[in-house]
Length: 194
Image (cartoon, rainbow, N blue to C red):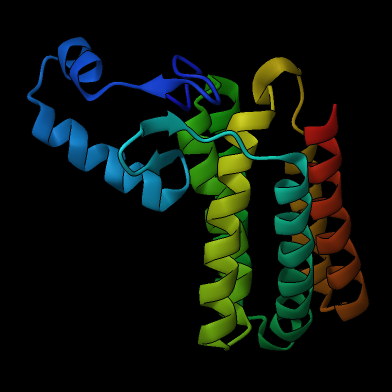
């Protein structure tokens, strides 16, 4: 409901109201709110209640700054670990991303987009870096849900950027991979500003 914008940033969430709306008891709603809080979608204030998260612009900028540093670092390392399987996995995600974009399914789109970036992080061979990138990807994609009108435009600039990144990895051009990843992340942040 948050992803589909049926619940909006800053909206108070009532366990009773949600349980009635969903036709379930309060226990699964309570558990779901806790999980959504852990994921960053909901803010729970003890003895006060739960609200749909409402991230500040500063929080968004900070998350993207961290993401950019971590992903460009991983991108530079990953270029030394390029294999045909790595390239095939990236290409598969690009093809899936293109199909999902056509259906305007934001949840699945974010999932495949995250997978593209995680493949690069995994190729760095640094499991701690991969874990940190996974965490910051989750955070930035949550911000995309709250701040972007993602499917308000006809084409998908991210898809073309992913294709360019794949091409740079195919050429094993380290500086180009790092540059394209950085530009891609900053373009995403700029898209949230609009």
